[in-house]
Image (cartoon, rainbow, N blue to C red; front, side, top):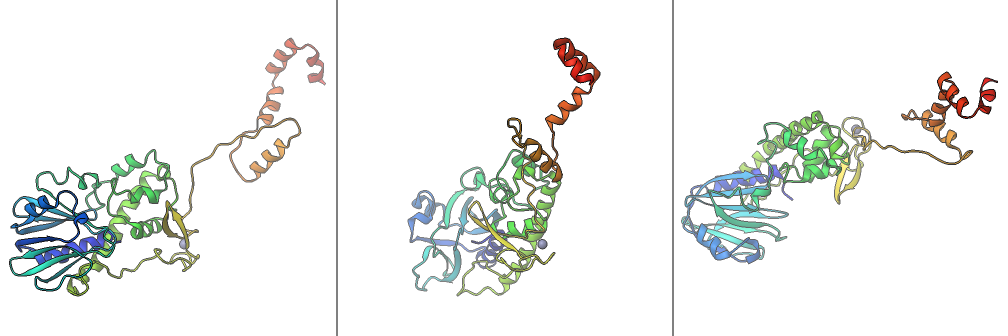
Length: 337
Ligand SMILES: [Zn+2]
């Protein structure tokens, strides 16, 4: 699945290839790819000139001269090809746009999960799907939205960071890279991450994504019409897909686990999970072994409170001894001896 840097690359290539072109015809070969009414989509798009491009999260926005926009999400395998309008269409071509210069932009998607819709320039950010997309790390001024959103969340930090409605832009690959760089265990409950750590996550997200965007820059130069604009490029990753490799920091074997169903690679030594503090009590009848358990807990350095010890200390105080002997006179003799 393309992530933010790949989508940024696709957007940049589209800009290079189609900016300023006028759409003379629209072909929809698979109705489900278009969200909403297909006739309305065609009416909004036909005759317009592409005036600019924008990326929001993993959505590509085509701004049109007639104050409409096309919103495109590539999902798993979506790709764009620029061909001639006389070229034969292929099996997985789902939507195409013909231009006045007789070239054709084809949307091709083998998995067919990608979606497209058209909205008005005025309110496209306030309606579906963009109304549910949080700002990406480059758009954020600070981490206050993360601090607020994660404050009461017990879900794993990785799952929380993948929620695009809070902060957009981190997918399965780069979230693993960011958590590795910031030495945070992917299963750490989100509410246990401090504001300082969230700040580090945000800053690292920008660094990691920018590095990948820069790597994608070379894709624009090497764009090949036959391969289409998928935005796929090689980026040097430190943990993603590197199960059993040695950690670049400490040499420990990287481990793969599943967090909310998503394959996750991390370093078990560099990324420790502090977990949520637990509180537990031990009780039982006389001779059940409470003291043994209590001694064991103390031996492990766990903060503990032994009620037996507290009571024994209390018996030694004069005040308590006096009050008890008033209640039960026979006790006085026992305590004094
Ligand atoms: Zn390590």
